[in-house]
Length: 251
Length: 250
Image 1: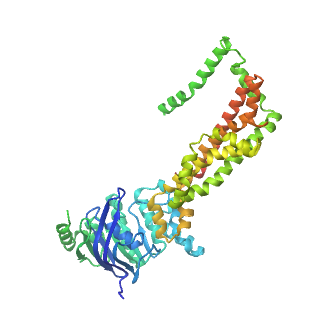
Image 2: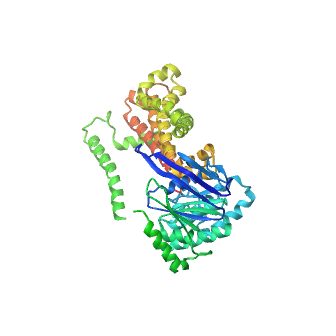
Image 3: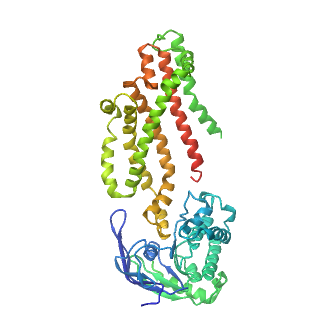
């Protein structure tokens, strides 16, 4: 019995792509995440990082090995493991408020309203509560996607390059917002990115993945104490870790 | 803005051109008014239609038939189309059959419908429903199968089961496309109605047109055609207006 919240043991994953070619995405991946930890997965694009999240979420199952959550094999999705997708996939037919409330269907309705308002406020979306997603900017859509996932209070937050398509300023704000939220709610997070700075800033640990079929090349532990802010980006420890990851980064 | 106005102008140019040609042909005596009445005569005939006899004798029966046939086909096509769009084994059961039957010209089914259902409302409704239902099943299936996978997966991560995903994600997402196909199918229903009324029966707009033809009342034939055309355009406009209100999120 392991006390890890999420554990990958000898996980390999192959699947058929649209042209029916076999894609070997993951090869013998081992890692675990403890409760309240933020782990970043970093690696070249197309390296199967998203596959890690899909397996953790229960959207797909490993070809070999086991993925377990609280010691139980993951066989299906569960609201305890919330996934924020790479694309801003808000539900276009629902208003911002309805989108945020989407996952609350299983909860007693008397608390819903107040929680939705709180998240509208936290994400700076109150002004757009009754707008449809098509009226939102990229940054707002991503805040909406985060709120929709966070409102159901997942124990494990899975994020798939959520800030990849944002401009630098919006991205910096979102990183800080995410750090604050994870700190406040005490949730655990597995964060996939291809941005080294982002990985060091957000992660307690950083797993560097190889190109496909992906395996873990190296694990780094963040030398920066919490609470982390973007101020740390200029510190020598940060810069030397950045350089070290860059040296190891597969081409 | 300028281009828009030019386009709008271009789109109405053919109408006066045709009316002018029509006027010249009839006015010059090049064509016998028995075959082509003057435009003014056709328009006058159109207003003659707005009488109690026409409305209750022909228009109302036609509306009931077109409504009945359309609703019947939707009632069958909606569940079958949506289910076969979601479940591959149902698609294999249903789609090849639809793929074949939809290429049978509806006109070819009319004699069979007369044999089976007589010459009254039952036959009209059957012709309309048979003409529309197989097309609609395939269209609805394609509409609901086109939901982006990541929306469905987002629903799954919230713990939704298959039925909840259908109700809360697949249907709302595909509703604009379904609505648009309903609009198009309503146009087909009008054509099949007139077809079914032309060949049998003693009421309805199609029957009215045939009767006018038998008595060489060509102005009434034109009026009937115009009337059917206008009803079709009106149905289309209503569907568009309601759709624009219902689906403001698109």
